[in-house]
Length: 480
Ligand code: NAD
Image (cartoon, rainbow, N blue to C red):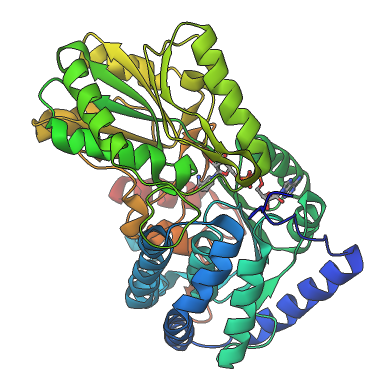
């Protein structure tokens, strides 16, 4: 029997077990909402510091489920988490501070302000590609905002969150149940949706639609972070060495399993051959293996991805593309060699459907406008990038690209700037994580209006409706 590093999916909790976990989260939320935001932030930051001290153990668990290279785990799971914790710890009090409202002089005798109240239990339904960063990173603002989290990790990467929940509990810094994990498949996800006060869902567009429909029926707030098809627009004046290395890293990092990963390169014809030559040279230096050190590219994590990637490569070949790489290195371990698809066209699945694997299709375009048109000719609108020496032109061109996030001579870095909103348009989702918006979404706003003076008199627009009141109201409107 071949040795496989792909663990089976986790057993699903029964509805009774899930309900028990959800009840513990709800009880903890009741206590936690009364803790001042500064204390909440300090406690969560300290929890993170203690987990970070145990990062070698954490890597072992993440590796057992994903076979990620060590540096990739450090760069793409640990570092962004650290930046998220530090951003929200420094800003949560300011963002959640009660804010006075602008008001007209006719309301001068009243106080008006907005306060941000925790929602209660926040359900985090998460995928398998970043089994630590996504659930833990999203817990940070949810907890600092005063909620409990009920996490439903992917059934394919459950151990990481079970380890994390145990580590969080071990610190003794958070109430029991505040960081709760419900394990299993989509049926457990549905129960998490039903028992939470709000859900942040990260996953495929297909499941996202089902979650949105169910949340609509329940009138439950839901934020959706879904799939993408990152177009990399390489203009003729781009710095080829940086663009080519970015293409290789942006397409193959995490073995291509990154929602904002580069999924298609649209390259101006004048620069195309130089770009492709540099990409091929860079690809030739990649080392692939089952994680650890001295490895750049790992394996696929989710078994059905293997067929999907192979099918897209076969479809591209059958429609006339030249595929360089893309061989099966180790089927039992879901390992496919990074693939460059030259001569890609819009008829190919690899240019239209999310691949989520180590595949970089390249298509020639005649000008920047054509590149933008093709970039927008997709159902997705998560991340995009523009590569050019003219930064002003690239930034202005970006405004025509239908994407929630655009990099100029940059890719896959938005997560590391948590003051930026992260999310997509079109079929890539609804709402944003990170930034001020991504903290306040875990709260409901409460608008408070307090009458101060004169304490005993009615307001003039109350009963009785006399004719002099019409004149008064007209006069007030003229003066406002
Ligand atoms: P998926 O949609 O299959 O599953 C995501 C989660 O939803 C899992 O925990 C799953 O068990 C759960 N689930 C399944 N059916 C459900 C239902 N009916 N109700 C509630 N929960 C349900 O996605 P996946 O294969 O785990 O992840 C890959 C996808 O995630 C890719 O499309 C990728 O682009 C996307 N993704 C997006 C982002 C982002 O921030 N936009 C980040 C990472 C991954």
